[in-house]
Image 1 (cartoon, helix red, strand yellow):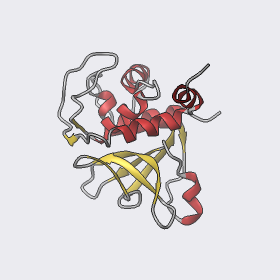
Image 2 (cartoon, one colour):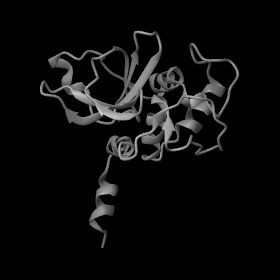
Image 3 (tube, one colour):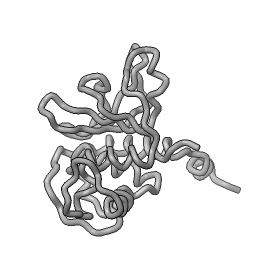
Length: 183
């Protein structure tokens, strides 16, 4: 007989596991730190108490047994990513928002970037959003299952520390992705 907890895990979709991985990071929020770190490969990570917005994505996807460190590094070896640094580095390539966005564009499903009420249903828990901040920097997060009073979802991200906030339409949205691509 399968335990109730195991049954829930077995019935979970990749999106459920990605969201669960993002929410788990809220229990002990990481302080923002995007500094370069050497790490093992595969499965490397920065210390749990620090990280950048891209680390929220990497950790959330690892909860669904999707290792972006390996996937992005291998994909970048076979394809030139627009805006990417030419020297491949498995310590950092998966931690760059532009590289994550390029990977999701190539291998996931690109979705609408509008946040008007007619578009709310397109924003699903576990999706990835990419913004361009007013400073010109890229930023990313995971769409939550929590919604504001108008039905727009919250986002789990790290701009100061890992948080679940009502910020989906706070900055210019430049990407919205679902991975793995639905069949």
